[in-house]
Length: 219
Image (tube, rainbow, N blue to C red; front, side):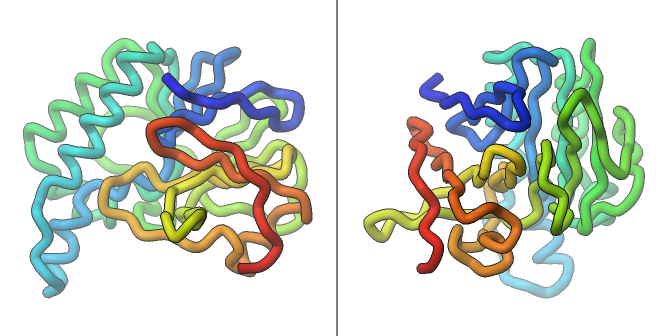
C-alpha cells in the first residue's frame, strides 16, 4: 500500500497514501475534511460551477481504503460536509454509499467548523473522541502536547515546486491532510501550523508512496 508508520504518544499509526490514517491496534480508520458536497455548496452560494464529481471521487477513495484495511471503526474527523445544507442535499446514491460503508462497523462523526452538529446519516456524533493515549478533535488545541490528532488546516508540503497534502507530526501531535477531492490547503511552513508543533517536526507526504521529510522552520 506504500504507506508509512509513525509513532504518536507511544502508539503506532499508519499514514496512507490517500491521506487516511490507520490505527492497527484499534482497527480504526481516520479521515479528515472530506468536505462532501463542496461543488454543490459553491454553486448554491453563487460561485463558479465546478464539475460535480467531488463527492463521488472522495467516497470512491474511502471505499477503497475500507476494502483494503477492513477497519472495525471509521472516524471522520470533522468538516465531513462542506456545510449542513450540503449534508442535507446529498444525492441519494451518495447517501446509499455512505450507509453501505457504515454497515457492520462503528462509525464516528466528529464535528467540525463546517458541520457543527448532527446529521441524519447514521453513526455517532461527537465533539471529540478519546481512545487510549490519543484524543481526536477537528482543530488542534494550542498548548496540548500529547496524543492529539486533528485536521482543519489541510497542510500541504512543497518540494521542487510540487505541492502535496501531508501529515504533520512532532511525535506528540498529528495534523492530518484533507481527504476531500476539492480542498485547498495551507503551506507546511505557515506560522499557525509551525506554532502548533515542536521545532523538529516531520511531514509525511501523500501520493503514490508516502514520503517522510523534515518540516522546514520557514518557507
